[in-house]
Length: 151
Image 1 (cartoon, rainbow, N blue to C red):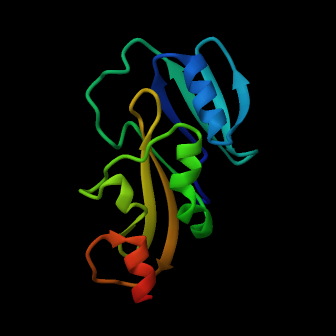
Image 2 (tube, rainbow, N blue to C red):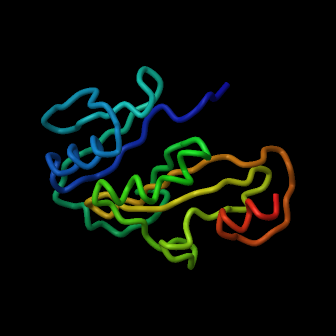
């Protein structure tokens, strides 16, 4: 029944700054209004709503302020450089420093490769690429370069 993510919403403190940021990620503006702005993640299939508010500093919890963008594995391997060219820094995740990313997550029954960064308001963003589906794998998180050597 469920085919994918249709929408996600994030609070932002400066809608103009956020519009520029998400455009730099290659997202297409779908609608710009007074209270909310929408970007297409995949045109006609999924979008991201940004809500300008003064209360962006509310306590952080990743389930409330995190979005993972599905990307191809080949794109993920070049994502750190791609982000840095846009003035966006990769952040530490799961005790892996930015220079160690992308990392491989053993999320059974599907393992993923991922890279983490923040938007201007500190919302957690992730580029994620599936590696193996429906396969129970027992390993610890590792750098994608290490994964590639083993697989």
